[in-house]
Amino acid sequence: MMKYGVIGTNFITNWFIEAGKSIDDFKLAAVYSRTEERAKAFAEKHEASYIFTSLEEMAKSSNIDAVYIASPTSFHAEQAIMMMNHGKHVLCEKPIASHHEEVEAMIHAANENNVVLMEAVKNTALPNFQKLKQAIERIAPVRRMVTSYCQYSSRYDAFKEGTVLNAFNPQFSNGALMDIGLYCVYPIVELFGKPDHVKASGVKLSSGVDGEGTLLLTYPEMEAVAMYSKITQSSLPSEIQGEEGTIVIDHIQKLEEVHIHYRDGRKEEISTTLDNDSMSYEIQAFHDKINGHNETSSINSLTTSLMTSEIMTEARDQLGVLFPADEGRSDKRYKGLS
Image 1 (cartoon, rainbow, N blue to C red):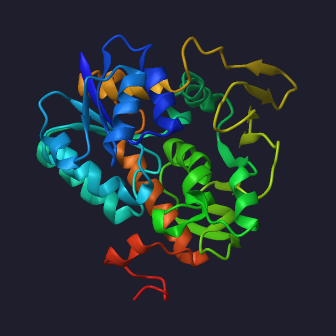
Image 2 (cartoon, helix red, strand yellow):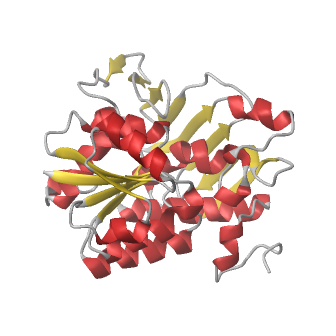
């Protein structure tokens, strides 16, 4: 039985716990919150036996084996490293960290402590994404991938009225690229690796974060475009374009319907209906890594997480989107970094 502690008592953690119920060896054991009252209420709601208001005490506890981190991104690296240094496996919500150097430090801690660290990116753990990976050879060679995720945020209304909530606050390493742009970039990297060049453009909001943007990723024999936004809405599908056909993805985050449109006019559906909660597949992949199941060990690899973070860090540098966390970077390429 995998006994979990959770950091974060928000709606995402609720989703995580509900999804975990479909995993045979999943057990919620402990809840961390800065306030005892909130920790108790959340623990009672989800039938957790232990509560913590000290992260260090939680890290030292023998009552948990793994930790799910769903705190703001700016806290991910510090919290994950603390947990791993005390022998806990860590499933960390996306994005895994504020920038690539934090990711490198997290990977080092995982290796030093012989524990599993995984970024909780939902779409690349879904069965339909695995089917998509297998289908690419049927349209090869691939020349272009275009991903789109533009979803108007209700928090943007508050922003326009003068209230800067966490979603648009650079203090917490947030913004459109970090929040939903990752769903566009991560699958590209998972399929094609790190690009030779990154070109970013976008709209920077008055708070200092990006509201929307576009990344052009250039590879030796193809290119990829990632379009994302939290200040506009779009229903555009995503595509992988090959010389023999195009794979059309209804929504890059959900991958509910995936079809191949062959050049000769044939159409083939490669997606299937999910048997479980969509979030459960990333939890199962995490457990498989811990249990040494090689057939699923490549899902959401740390190599993909690091390359994605490097791309996103480079993109933010080009856009001039800076976080307080960037002050700790050694590669202060952007002129705005001291």
